[in-house]
Structure formats: structure tokens, C-alpha cells
Length: 487
Image (cartoon, rainbow, N blue to C red; front, side):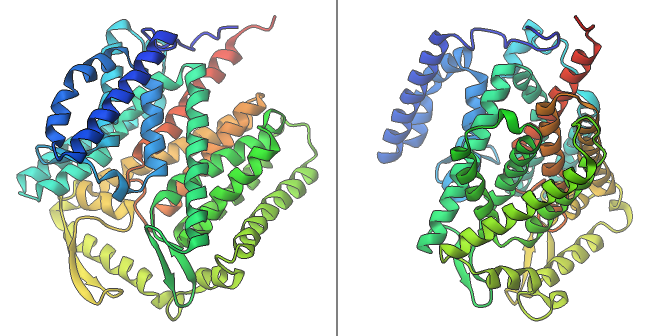
């Protein structure tokens, strides 16, 4: 049955002909790019791709382009993605950036066909529109102040990707595309987690190093994305167990993703995941539509969640990668007492430098993109000048002021509240699981962004917009279905 409000993508995106054109186009692009890099003729290779690139733009599938973007970003590290890049003025463009522009272009050329008709952007759309306006102001202020163009370009890419919420709504409003995108996201996070575990087993690879007190750590930023996907998957399983994938796929997938979180040794991320699970457990007490006694819900859910955490820690210990003592040591302290931990102290010093930089007339709108702070980093024993801050909130305060922080928080807190309401009210168990998973992922993100910068410095902005668009689509569908008369 076709649900009013659902949509088919414009053009022939689901036909076999388009699939073949897409596959051939990717092969041609791959061959030309590899050849141009081997012979040191990268820019010539880019020029050669103009003609097939235009054909690919006109006939390509937006959901496949989106899948490549998210898959590349979750599986590959920033170093791997940056091995091949070009510059558009002062903005550097990696492969995933070029694909993102491509995806955006496919959405733009679909607009004359009124493909966004009937798709409500919701409160998030208005808040993101305000945020985009503030981004434009921050870019102008940074350029006018003479800040380093390269720094401005990086922040324009990261913050500007919030605009992708709108084309994501367009793609995810199609039922088949939404399911396909979810499978790609889950598969990519599982592969990313598997790579982490393999690195841990062999004790080598990018980002792998050892601490005297807490053992092996893999210092890349992928666990932020993997953690969000893991929580979304957990919510789906929790409330829609009957429609689950085979157990033989569920267990290794969750163990790989959970193992990646453990091996990252990122305390802000660990705290965010635990807070998210605790919040989900409490929220579940208010859902009355499952016809399960309250006591049973409390006991079973708590037991399963605790069992999963124990299983992940045991698996990592059994593989000889990290011991439970190493993990416990990391949660307690790293150097001296927790209050004098050098990494925590470094954050305090950087936040203090931000407050000093935006005092007075800069408090409201910040200093613009590319602004830097200078402070002493105790873990390095040197004074550094940096344009990034280990906190999305302080980072946003530096470049966009208190106004930017308020709007940024409003975007995600509003989404958390709306996800909670959808979870409590919907009678659809699958939709309830999705709402619960997004609720958890956003809480984790809000907490982790207090101590790091996944919202503003890393390359996963499109994944956060994926969560918000996914939520909005489910809310739209719930409204349409609840308004239909019973037959």
C-alpha cells in the first residue's frame, strides 16, 4: 500500500539502466583516477572526468552517491581520505567532499520536478536554516578579520554540511532508499569496528599506540560514528526484535562495534554511551503500548544491556588486546588523580582561552571562522596556537558566539525531545525502535561533544544530519498514518 506523504525519487533512479550507467561511470572514474595518480597527472585526470562526470550527474542514483559518502567516511580515516585531494580556492576537497557536492547537485536538479513537495522539514528545518545563516556570518567575519583561509575552508565544509539535512530528507522519504541507506550505514560501522579489532589483535596500524597505564589505544575519530550507529541498531533491536536480522549477523556486528568503542579508550564517548543507555532505560518506563508489565521491562532490559557491556569487555580481554584492569584504569585516571589528568587539564586551559578570546563585544557572535586560540598544552609541554577546540560548544562559541551555541544545542535537544515523544506515542514497534535508537545516538553525541568536537570538527556532520532526517521522516509518516481512517 502506498502511504500518502511517501515519495518516489524523480527521474529513473531505480531502473536497471541507471544502475548500469552508475556502475560503468564508477569504473571509468576509478580507472582514470588511478592512472592519473600513478603517472602524477592528477589534475589532467580530473579534467578528463568532466564529460563522463556530467553524464553520471544526470543519470546517477542519489542513494548510491549518499551510500558511498557515508561508507567512505565511516570506514576510512581522515588520513586515508586526504591522500587524494584538490583545492577549490582555499577549500580542500577530498573524495568524500566531491561526492557530497555531487549528491547536493543531484538534489538541486530534482527541485524543478517539485520532488520535495509534501515533505515537511519540521522544527529542525527552521533551526538548521537559522544555523546556516549564522554560518554565513561567521565565514564573512573570519574572512574580513584576515584569518587563515585554510582554516576558514575546513570550518565552512564542516559547519556548512548541516545544510545536507534537506537533500537527506528528499532521499530518505523514499521507503526503499531509506532501508538501503540504513543497511549501508550499519554495514560500514560493522566493517569499521572489525578493522579496529584487527588493529588491536596485531597491535599495529594507523592510530595504534600503547600507554603505560591503560594499554593499547586506537586514536582515530571513527568510534564517534560507530557509537551512534551501534546505539541506533540497539534501539531497533530492543523494540522490533521480531523483525531482526539473523542472530548470526547481529552478534558479530555488535561485538565489532562495541569493541571499537572500547579500543578507542575515549572516556567522553564511553560516558555518552552509558548515559544514552540509562536514559533509554528510563524512557522505556513511560511507554505503555508494548503490553509488557513494568517490572519485567525493567529487569529484562537492564539485564540485556548489562550483559552486552560485559560480553564486549570479556571478548576484548579474551583476545588479549586489553584487560578489564586496563579499561578500569582508563575510566579512573590516566596520570595522577582524575582532576589533574593532563588531557582534562588541557581542555580546561583551551576552554579558558576561548572565554578570554570572546569576552566583550565578541560574546554574542564570536570571532568568525578560522579564529585561533593560544594556550599551554601540558601533555606536550609547549604553547600551541590552534583553530580547533576539544569541545563542540566552546568551538562554536569561538567562531559563532553564544548565539551559535544556543542554536546548535536547540537543533539537537529539540530532536531528542521529539524522538522521545515519538517513541512513547507510536504503536508501530519498528518505528518505536528507530525513535529510541536515534534518541540514544543524539544523547551520546550531545555528551561526547562536551569533551571533543564530533559536531563541529570531525567529518561526520552528514551522519548526524542523517539521524535528524531519519527522525523527521518517521515523524512525518506517523502523522500521515495516524490520520488515515481505519478500514
